[in-house]
Image (cartoon, rainbow, N blue to C red; front, side):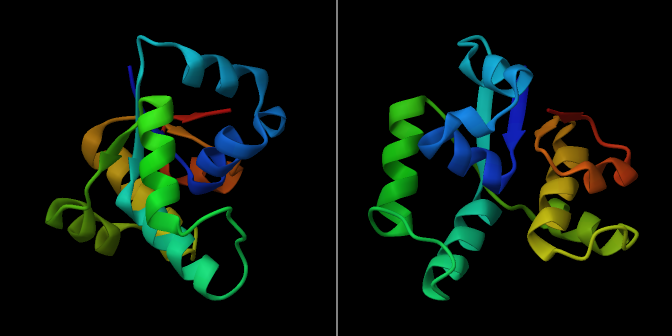
Length: 128
């Protein structure tokens, strides 16, 4: 199964896995699953780090690269199809990064691993 990580899920998995639900942790640890991190999440982390709202042990890019390699995750690029879909989404959620993750989930037909119940308004499959 392919899975898309919400940004907080990626951060919790890499630093404080106890914050994850039992179901989320189990599905992410299953070696048969392909776990994807969106480039939107890397972008979001970079912005938050620059604003002083995210403290990491290193810069965002090497942190993401190290964690992807360590955990066997893959990066999901942002395509024009994803961007076009964002424009069509109703404004249930105003966070631009979450909206892009929803668009990627819909376009790629993959569930999002997220605690954010507000994403359910889009009819995506959310695992938590």
